[in-house]
Image 1 (cartoon, protein in one colour):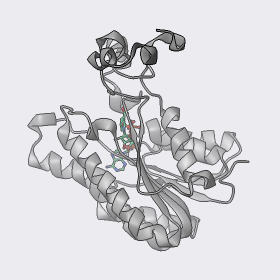
Image 2 (tube, rainbow, N blue to C red):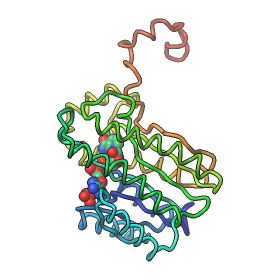
Image 3 (cartoon, rainbow, N blue to C red):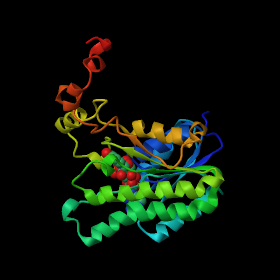
Length: 268
Ligand SMILES: NC(=O)c1ccc[n+]([C@@H]2O[C@H](COP(=O)([O-])OP(=O)(O)OC[C@H]3O[C@@H](n4cnc5c(N)ncnc54)[C@H](OP(=O)(O)O)[C@@H]3O)[C@@H](O)[C@H]2O)c1
């Protein structure tokens, strides 16, 4: 068993994608996991089945986190099933369909799901959250790159601020609060990604590929672990170096460096 044996965790949006991978990873590390879903009850049951198949434990909880009632239901289930909570992972989120033509209704909805829900879920789960616990929110590299769906990017900027402020408030209880910011990651949210666009994304990523859910889950598991006890108030980029600048000879800055720095094996 891993570092998280005896801990309890909630992962929102764990029916699929990154949340599912985080739930499975935390369970593999020993935590009991509340697997939250909204519409994907069957998919969440599959996440739980995978956890149990690997020897882990947990339960599923369904709720629309865009509503107060949904948030309250999740907290009530945590109280009933776990009694306390060690690790809260705010992962569930949506993108907007309207993108730069987004209307007021969709704008309010995306802020309700991506910002209001993590804020009030964290606030209402706080009485259950153990001293020395963890709050980890999934943000996005979209906060530092101008995207078409900028309402979505704005929501992620908001949770970065939430994490920093909460870290300062909760530090005296030994609770760390951080965000992780994935780059493009292969999930339903990126279902537009075909081979050509994946290759194009790889070309603007230092590590030369797109991300996969377990690339993110490993970092979340690390933040949840004792090894990360001294990290708080941070937004950790988990994008493989997405959009750090032009790569290779296309980068004009490289010609300004001494050639020994850029040449292989330090040989000019
Ligand atoms: N994929 C990427 O390229 C990428 C990049 C950067 C950041 N992220 C972030 O990573 C996180 C996970 O994204 P993903 O790609 O795994 O997304 P995904 O595959 O679209 O899954 C989204 C999850 O959020 C849940 N959800 C959506 N609306 C909800 C609501 N109203 N109430 C409760 N739950 C709701 C869904 O539940 P149901 O399916 O059960 O309805 C699902 O489990 C998000 O915070 C996203 O912003 C993703």
